[in-house]
Amino acid sequence: MIGGHAQRVPGAAGTTQAISRLGIPSTVLTDGPAGVRINPRRDNDQNTYFCTGFPVGTALACTWNTQLVEEVGKCIGNEVLEYGCDVLLAPGIFGRNRHGIKIFLFQEGSWNYTLFHNPL
Image (cartoon, rainbow, N blue to C red; front, top):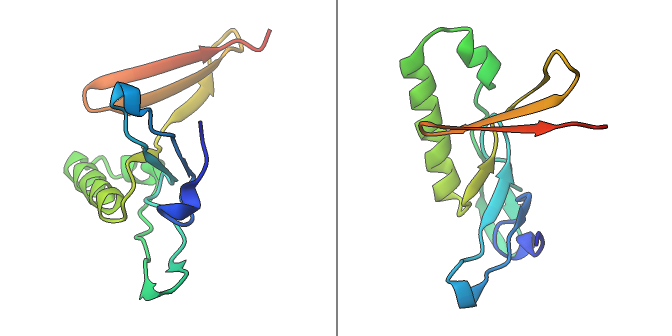
C-alpha cells in the first residue's frame, strides 16, 4: 500500500492509499531520524523546501538534557506538519537480545512498541 508519493510531497519515503469506505485518509511517510527528508526543489516551483538537519538521538541523549530533547522533538514535529507529511519513520532502536532475536523498539508519547523478529 505504498506508492504515489511524488504527487504530494516530492522526495518523501512514500504514501499509504486512502480507504474511503472506512474513512481512512492517505498519509505521507517521510524518512529521517534527524528530521524530515524530502526533495528541496519541486517541478514548476521556484521556492526551495530545505529541512533542518538535527542531531541524531544518540547525540542528543549524550547531553542528558531532557528539555533540549523535547524541544528538538517539537521542532521536528513542526517541520513534519509544515511540509505536508503525516508520519516520520523514526526514531527506533534496533538490537538483539541474548538469544540472538532481533528487537525493534519504537516510542510514541507514553506508549512503547516492541517488535520481536526471530529469523529461525
